[in-house]
Length: 186
Image (cartoon, rainbow, N blue to C red; front, side):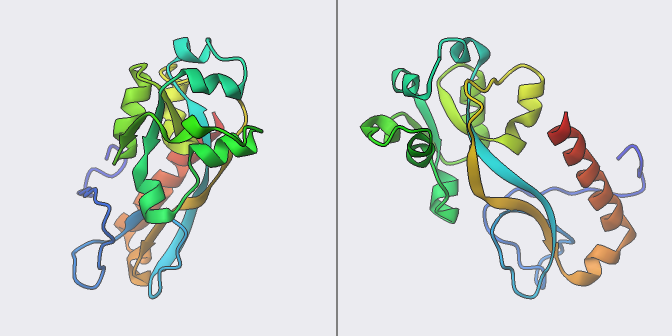
């Protein structure tokens, strides 16, 4: 907004997919796999899942098996909409194949609520690296382990092809790509 004060930005957050032919929307930011027939797609970033929690909790963990002593925070929208991997998959890949406790804990319908709970020390989230990067940079979230798995989905901008040619959309695309580069590389 500082660079382009003449552009009015309207943000609408919703888990439903927007119909670009019926709604007055230029671009959609999606976390998914696609394909999205009839839409132009601009890839933004792949994401990975890794345990994240308040730094004081991270300091109490030495190995992935220690997670059984903490409340696991689950974000259910990824499993519901994307059949994406969750705690069970991360633990199995980390070498813990029998973790009957992996489904226990607190369940959230939105990632931001689960992330806020992790920041407050309520437990450990299987965080999306891209979404948690800012809070990690601020020292609000820490990774107790370096190990991560693919989220099996990625962030992309979608819309009708002509929208990507609009001045205001090009400005937004340049800004969001620059912000992601800065966020993910620092």
